Figure: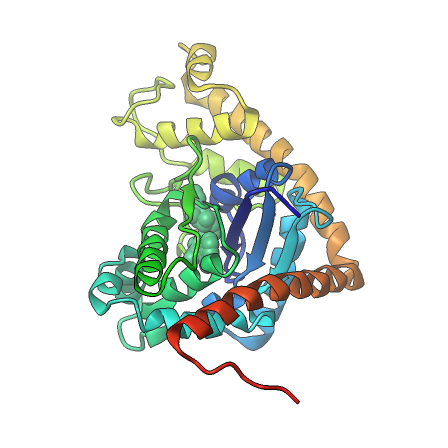
Length: 334
Ligand code: AMP
Ligand code: TRP
């Protein structure tokens, strides 16, 4: 029997991945993979909560799988799969949606933000999205969910739903804990350092993509907002610089104090040059690996095929228990 604790996490194939996705999520997945039994999912069903072109969604789903692998996620020891391949996710989401309250979904800040942006045609899927996320996690009896800071609220909801179900029907789900990195949990916009770096930002200078070329990275860092104080200091008075230092520290592994010391008295120019170098070198191996993987579609196909088989077996087991507990008559086969 596999005694390792279980990890589940997922990312939507809804655009290009930023260094926020990398530092806040994916990079930690790599760190955790040796120690845990991990499921890393491409949550394509979440992606259609906001309209998507079918061809675009297909392309982004494969690219996301290649990105997972390019970051160093090992398909031999993890389960990598596509959410829509395991129908138990949709099925459990239905049962859980009958246990989640309108009031608690109404409080979700991501829904409030996303529905504000798109006021005319908000799908009910966007509203119930956190319930599908709870189903993702609970199907695998997950111990730990490594995500960025913005997913904390969704995870709280998953915990509440799990406990509610367990109390009502007897112990069924493990109640999962979040795993949020100390540094890098919230990478901010390079243009408005008061808000999160996001791939859906209209201003492309506000984010760095994992696959950005060195000259693009250089340009974006050059244009990144700073301040007139001129000192490389980690302080809430200097949100732009603070964010750049977080990025520096996350990529280089150097701690904040030593970065402050290194740039004492040297102004922003040198710091920005070095930062560009640190990011370019950090992303280079990922980009190279990604390009190679994208040339080998058969290999990628094989990974998501095996992943779905493995995930399905585990997910079905939980779903069968749930169906039985809520009073559905088990289907008979001749
Ligand atoms: P999303 O891009 O919203 O699908 O997010 C995928 C994962 O990346 C989630 O775990 C997020 O918490 C994480 N993430 C997204 N943007 C950032 C950011 N700016 N800083 C840190 N983590 C992030
Ligand atoms: N909601 C997450 C996001 O937008 C993606 C996600 C879906 C997820 N299901 C999940 C993350 C399960 C962790 C676990 O980033």
